[in-house]
Image 1: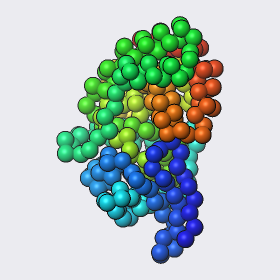
Image 2 (image 1 turned 120 degrees about the vertical axis):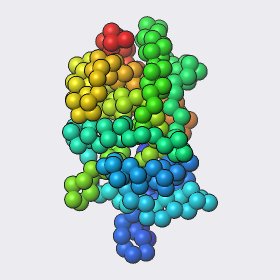
Image 3 (image 1 turned 30 degrees about the horizontal axis):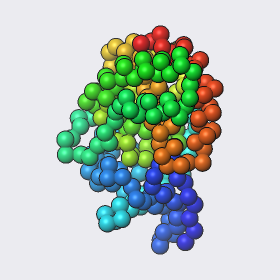
Length: 262
């Protein structure tokens, strides 16, 4: 039985293996309680509403191990911002949350912000601008709708029949649609890109308040910086320094431009 490690930022080990029947399948463990519960409770109901996740092949509760359908075709950053993805996310965001489901608790605490700023070592002006984004972030997490919580291009794939599939549901929870829209925009993005994404999503989802959506996308982009820096540092991922250097180079200029949306 051969295997290939596909883990990126997550804590779980993700391997592509050949099973006893000769099929290629994904084995993932130990998954979070959120993701284990997602595939058993939420996934079947969401799939009926057109929110497609990999088929669950088997599960071992004692080890929190999942065997999942392998989605063979990766997608790039440009493709993931297309109409099919926005439509699927809109269906997810409009699905009524079930209080019995298990959710990841999304939030942006002042302590987390300050911990990330200590690691980033940004100029004082940029650090103050990050604090401004933090002060406007409460609406992101107060929103009651469902979100995947991690919709970046690396978590999408396509089946042989072309059908889009979203995997990696360890951050499944509730919050603003902007949390799922922000990763669809390459890099930190621009004010123009946020407005364009807000326009497109609002048409698909019949969501009023385009200006608010664009603002929330910008806030989500800033929040994701804190999440990524702290996660990579805590899990001692090899590309931590690469991300840190990229943020130090690009974040100050982005903050100068994006802070006007607040």
